[in-house]
Length: 584
Image (tube, rainbow, N blue to C red; front, top):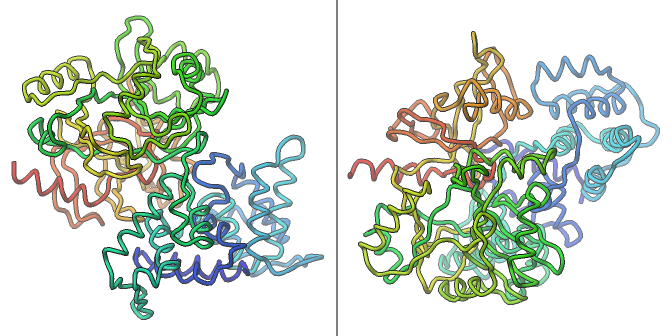
């Protein structure tokens, strides 16, 4: 496929904020994509050349891109810098300058999707002496052959900032629209750029099947390739494999113990809800890999957890679901998540960090055991299975604290015990439930003492003045609506001026600086990437923000660097909180 065709699709996607229209555009693209390009196309429309579970970065900065644009166009770096400052988007700068380029190239050819994909993918493996110059040449080669529109998206993809607003939901539905048109009896409306399924039950079944395939594979490119080749048969051959992260199962919030029992049944299993971060432990022969819920490999950051798994879990092949909880090495007292979150990103002084901020691993579920898929095994049996293989050792690796009861009084006492221990609350689980990755399916609920907090992403802010000069303050927060982010208010309360006091303005500013997209005066717009957990007193209707809502007295609780953009609280939850608070 010609890359110019994909660039035109990018432009169409960028020009609309409507999720259904984006899905329609994608599905039409997939219908005319050949088997040799399908995986590349799926990755590229996500602005990626590697699947979500692969953390490898292209390792290209804006400065390297500027050098590549200079080589491709003959225009000086100083002028490119000025254009960048004026336009605020290096992709648009490349588009403008390629159109006016003055330096003729010795060799130029029409770009293909395969050529662009392979060049960009090669960037991730270029290392060692001369690697900077090599990367610049690889990018410049593409820009020298690129048409203006192509240049815009080559640069954005290189910088991992595509800006076309395509999320997992659109890709999932586009796969169904493209490859199961007959099965779901889909009717394409070219004018409205949407589809209408005649058989909604069948459509939902197929959508759920594609979602489950992604939850297990963590790679829509692989899912699309299998579906294109095998149709529905692709769903029959899905296998869990250690070393390939899986989307974890998520839980809704119950109002209280009575509500918990009503939703999960009696008897129910109750477990401590730990104030830590979710991890998956994968054992494959002699190797152990630790993943976060964002599918990031943090084995290097948590070497002690790797050793705990090897010495205290008596199995050779498994995927376990667990929570890592920090504790004070001097007192043994459990610490809030924020105290250990810094370990997730740490690349240096790892041994010292492990000594200063140790974690205890609480195992609570199993997805795969000695080659057997455990997803459809009832929860009660899954718990029994991990009890057989885990050799508990306090402050290292243990089973999640649990009781099984039908007694409201006993459950309430367990809940109060969890709170007294400094935990967030309890989880209530249906004993017969299966494990369904990635879904809030009602097989379990969480009970917490405070109003549901929200995980919101920062999309803007203002440079501070006075003693807060040099920091981004008044952070603009957004919730998720499908694949787009809608503003829901501003927050500054809860952030500290001194880092030793907690999450600071300086720390958040350092995270936001590389994500700045545009700046006008003191106001900045940033690429969604930094997620904050926020408490508030009330949800209010508001015409001032694109979500239609605002938070009254919001306060930052903590940085959620263990969560990804798919975990940002959605508009449906905000609307639910708004309606339920009125009925209390």
